[in-house]
Length: 266
Figure 1 (tube, rainbow, N blue to C red):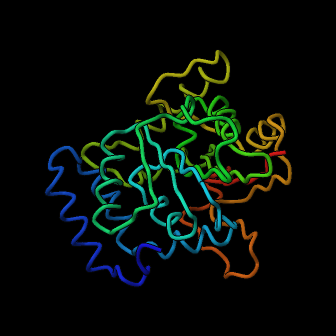
Figure 2: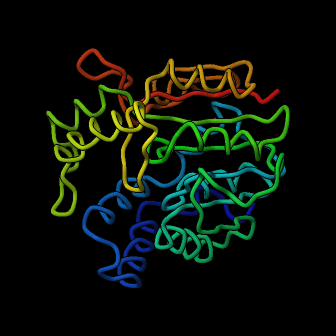
């Protein structure tokens, strides 16, 4: 592997993030920089543990679909031979590339792309990982596209936000910043979901509420088997490793919060 996970302590990550902030300047807003600090300040250990717990290890070629700032890509690269990463944001792809270069990874290739339409060939990946993004896309089309690029017998992981998460954003205004208004996002999400579910309308920038049963039904329709759903961070498929640690609650105000699903393509 390119480096030992122990080689990057919290001080080293702080230094890396400081370099990122200096390099990109005002292109990274306050909300995004706070997000970068949250996801990287404790290193990659928590992501490695989560991936091991769901068995996303030992693949020849794996896709990180909607990679964002790359925390999962960097962890996947330590557990798999080759990681291909894509994200619709050129900035985030660039940050991942810079981090990978500075750390010394040579087994990550990234490109700017959405996940609802991708240029990868059919049946190209041994596994597909998609964290924290499908609800920002026309999710049924995205699921179909993720299934298309996955080999038969390959594993898919996705997670999504249920109704409870947006109730939580409305009530608690979680992670509010000058350039991020959780209450406004929650309000708009209800309208966006109504338009998508009733009329099939999707425009870039929408947030969509997805219920666990809807994901399960769509995965079944796409030919997945051995489908498992649980609250975010609760899937523990590899009993040889310790139980994973959730990042979010599976329920807010009695409604589904953030949940995850895995399945195997027939």
